[in-house]
Image (cartoon, rainbow, N blue to C red; front, side, top):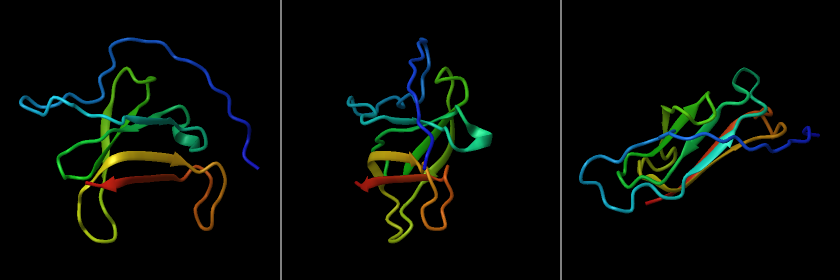
Length: 115
């Protein structure tokens, strides 16, 4: 059974995950989603985040190790079945709280809709 997880608020100002390029559509980057890692022992406390991006180049994944003050893009998730390369809508990441099949607790699952 997974350990109980508690929530706590972190207050800061100034963290920018991504800045749209000049001339980008005015709707920016909606549907931002972040998780704080709790079961990936070497990365506990780090934040992973993504948001919708209408570029057709996959779902970007960002990491922060200072509670969101600074961000670094660490990966891009691409379609692994059809090679459509357009995963961009409603991105979500989930850290498995316990082993599921061959995936150990702490495995990060990422998904999004095709655009």
